Length: 127
Image 1: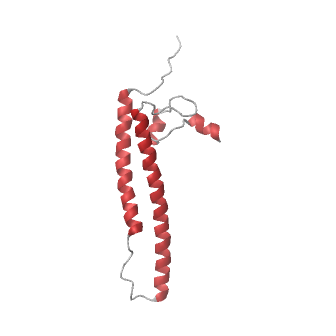
Image 2: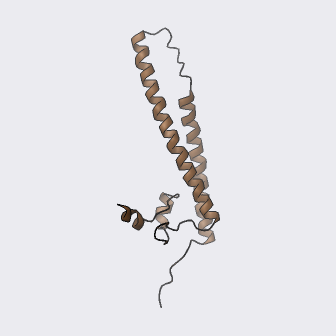
Image 3: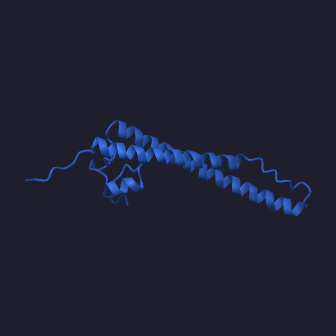
């Protein structure tokens, strides 16, 4: 007898993935708010009376830090968007199906990267 190939994850499995993704979205949104508050901070640390040289270094460092936080925030926003797209795939019952091969993505991969849309096989084909 041929082994039946599973076309999709069961409703129970999808519910488990949904719970995992909801937790990740909540944490990611909290992290995003921290990043936003860090780069939107006015940076007024009472340095008006410090030496001009020190103030120039501090402002340069502050600018680099704001740029880094902005980049991190952009990545975090993309991560949240990818997670929300995964939630849509769960609702459509297409979650966990590789968009290249059409096969199920390994469950362990989805537990580590719940927004994955490619199986390892498909990722390797892209290289």
